[in-house]
Length: 421
Image 1 (cartoon, rainbow, N blue to C red):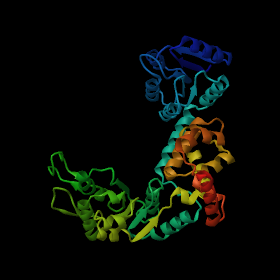
Image 2: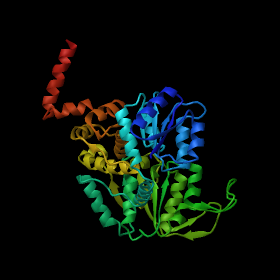
Image 3: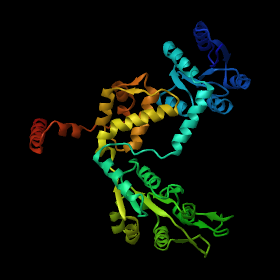
Image 4: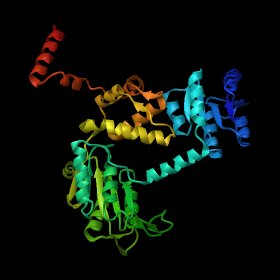
């Protein structure tokens, strides 16, 4: 018989849940707090857990984390009368099977339990392995818009060569994916691609990160360290956000590109390296050059081939394909069947202003998957996305209503006179 553990500090809630579950022929055990629950869980024998979030001694989030260690395949359904959207998202991200608000909708609770119980240990382990394999492979560049097709064609032509590539575009557009595809389709694909986020590394450490250092080169250099250029030897070095690199580091990168040699910090030995460099930036490097923040000679070394990645607002026709891809991938990550996105919900997503680009779209789809019911409806987008994003652009709607600038100007002037009157 299926055995379910209810963890809640409120006896009345435990009694209600017990009665409902026993009517469904489930065997039920109870725990009044997290500590009591863990002692029971260590003995094993449970097929699912229903756990409150707010409890004395040990809250539900800590119980959830402990369960992930004790029995990672045991489905945990979180319930709370104090939660909000952020709480729901956080619990699922931490490994909960689902989140239900108090007082629970009993029909939804029973359906959720059935779905959770369908996840046998073997199936779960298989899905985990599949996810690991999938994540180890380079994701495909999704889209059929003119801009995306142009990028794919450029990659096909350039990848087999050793030409350096500069990838430009706003944050969140997938510049790193372009770099990975460039490597995947190159003759260096059997060697590593090493990524460096130049914006995330302090200027005083960037040279050590790129070129390595010898023992004793500086106070904290207690042993020799191999830099990214050496790690990428024979493969590809991806310099992300290169526009944020210090001028001193730029000079050394330029020398490395010119001579195919590097010198570790604190050392004097020249080391030969065979590296293809792909760089990316969200900045206008021409403006950075004029402002004296970027070396023009390095720019010309890097920009043999320039690939401009369009913003999501410039390729909205790709949103349906991207949504389909994210729904499938995220649902697989959570071990759930893929949810259907209703046509009116998809249309609303296409109308929105995506300043955060693909990264923002993925986060929104993840939120909708977690918070929606059986399918993603327009009402879900309006409730869980639109209020927080404020992405509906009134000017764009106004532009759609007019065929030319003259008619728009007439309406604006008419409204202006009405307002002043």
